[in-house]
Image (cartoon, rainbow, N blue to C red; front, side, top):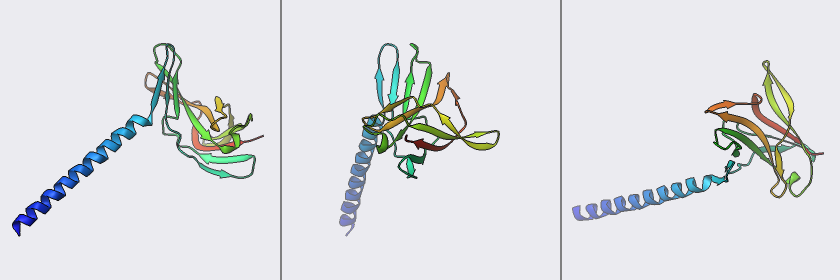
Length: 160
């Protein structure tokens, strides 16, 4: 009887060890694929995965959604040679701008003087092949974050 208990507990310990090894390996593999760095002589760019936004399509021309204003952004670029200033860009994906040469209007909800207002924000570029619009979200210089606006995280993408 005692011999069976020892064999069973040894088997459980071995199974648990294999499980932890597999879980750790999977986590390490995921960390390696989460970000990609592309470096050339004068610029550095970090591309992070684009998470699906919470979207509501009010009509065929207006898409509303939210993004998390506390995350670093989806694309981080440095244009200076010493890579000391980083520009963080958020991404908004929509099938409505995929394979279209549209120039949508981007409005973000901001807080100004205690009031929430919708403000038209210039977007930086559009990847029409994937249907992704990017806009400048914040600048990081010497580990100090500067936001062009006080964003709430809500957006409207108006397709004209």
